[in-house]
Every structure is written in C-alpha cells, then in structure tokens.
Figure 1: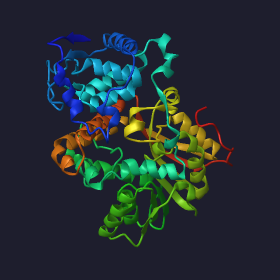
Figure 2: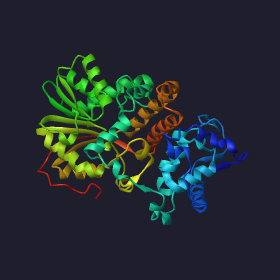
Figure 3: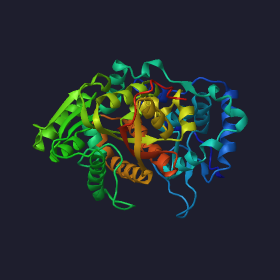
Figure 4: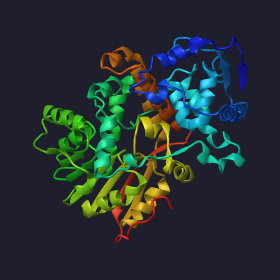
Length: 440
C-alpha cells in the first residue's frame, strides 16, 4: 500500500451523506453509534491489512461523490480514496463489511478503479483479519434476520424486494434479451454487441443439456423475463415456467405473446414447493442462490419429485468454496441487507450432497466464471452510462451507488476466482436418502 496524505478532510465530507434520503436509507444517512476505542481498533486492523496489499490509499478532502480520479500509469495498483476516514473506520468497526458497503453508498470512500480495488480485496479476503482475531468474528458480523428466511411468504417478499424494483430499471443495463444471468461468449474480451448472442448461446447450451426438442414437456423454475421459455418453445417444447415476481410475469407474458409462442408457454406465480406434475426436463437458471440453505432439501426434493423417469434437471448456479460458504451462511452481509435478502450462494459440495440426499446424481458439471466477470462488466458499464435514465425512473443517489457497488463487487468476485458459475445436469440416480444438513 502507498499512502498519500493531502490536506485533511473538511466538513464538506458530510456532503455525501447529505445526499442520502434518511427515511429510505437510515443506516447510510447516519453514522452508527460506537465507541472511539472500537473505531480505533478497526482503523488499526484495516490499515495493517491494507499495507500488505497491492493498493494505494489516498486520503482526500471531499469532492463530488461520483468523481473518479485516475492516477498512475496503466498497470499500477488501484487507488482507494478515503473522503471521510473517520466515518469509514467507524462503520467497519461497528458493522464490518456491511459498514464497508454503506460507507460507499454514503460517498465516504471511492476508487479510480472500483472493480480492481474490490478484486484485490477479494483475492486477499482470508488475510484481511489476523488469524488470532478471526475467532472473534461475532464482534463485527451480524446474524441474518429471521424475517429474511425463505418461507413461502418470506420468499415472495424477498423476491419482490429485488426483482420487482422496476422492469425499466433492469432494461437500463441488460441487453434486449433481458437475461439476468451469466452469458457464454464465443471469445473474451467481448463488447456490448456480443451480449445478446452470448445470452442465446448460454440458453441454447442449457436447453441442449436438457435434451429439449419437439414435444419435450419442460418446467422452468425462475422465469426471469421469459427468454429461455421462448427459445424452448421455438424448439417445439411445451413449457411451464414459474416465478414469484409479478413484474417479471407481466412482462414475460407480453414478450412470449410477441414471440408467437403463447400457445406453448404458461407463466405462473407459484412457489417451487407447490409445483406438481412430472416433466421430461426441469431447468433452473441462477435461482438456487435465492433459496436459502434451510430450504435446499425442499428445492432438490422438488427437482427429484417433478422429474419424469429418465428426465434431467439442468441448473446454472453461482458457487463459492465450501469453507467460505459455511462462514457466510449465517452472516448478515451487505448483499443480503441491500440486494438479495435471504440469499446464499452454495458450494459445489453442498449441491452434490443435497442432490445425492434427494436421490439425484450430478452427471455434468462445467464452469465458466470468466464469462460472468465479462457479463457483469458490460452490465455495469451500461448502467453507469445511463445514470440519467435511472434517476428519471425515481432511483436516487444512494441507490445508484449501491447498484454500482453490487455489480462491481460481483464482477470482482469472479475475477478473483472467489466465485464461479456452473452448469450442472442432475438425473435420478437412486432413491432419496432423506434430508441432509445443508451446512454440513
């Protein structure tokens, strides 16, 4: 770490928080109450960790929160600029990584290359806190609130909080296919014009893995905005697709009708636990992350129950290493507080164990995390370039910084290999063994 010390921040640093709607974002608009000692300890731990990383840290007087200040030659370490160091350390000392994210939303820190900065932190996540202090993790992390549990009613609320934000919001950064999951590119790096074809390539790969063709009776768990259902129907399949998002269902129905396949596709508001019937194939794309560990047995049990003999379940899933999943499972994170309430990214081990317990076998497992990083880069660049449109939709300053951090944070997870994305095929391999502890 290289530390640059220009003049100390003045009271103008509070201008970032002044832009925050205190009613909508109470924990961003105000600083947490905590002791000076706790803040000092956080400062010591964080500064010690940063000195070991390929980062430059700059302490600067407040400026417009969205200003980027490129520094150094290409290939030099990214710069993390602290506009209000006291607030930054105070939030981290009180709320850990939740505080880190809220500090960004408040404009108290910035970076000349946000993704690069977050990638450095993700690559060294296990080194940020000294070994002796990791046992005291409970001092700065919070338990997930029980209100976020994905009961039948809770899952509907959680999905509403993210996917029902606004179809127009998602259209500002997604490509015309409105596909909100990793694309599969012909080559990397890619440009914005490559994204629609890459999303179709991903969908077609999943449908191929599911053996989708004329007469296939296909169930999709998690409709999105209908692109997979349309492409399956164009192959001659009969498709039942289910979602918990009213906004998504309304637009998916219009898009399916516009594609001329409404006679082959039904779109329902239905929880996966309440589904019936038997299907030649079940496809579920990046939906397991919203299930929650407590309900993984029910999810995999539903896949097994809904598959006809000889059928295939095809999943696309974001994954993380098993040990990190265990550490994250009961922790309330910035992502779970602001972006995906009730969600948990599984590990490949957890998927394998849950599949086996439900009487399923993983017969295909392929990853392509680099493609997700590229997908997220294109989404983030498009989102930033259309900031005025996002504002016109009613999304405020704090939301825009939250969404930028969410996209950059996710991209960094894939660039650092902290996260991966897998396409898996499950078949009925045995009788169910009963439930197993999802977090074993």
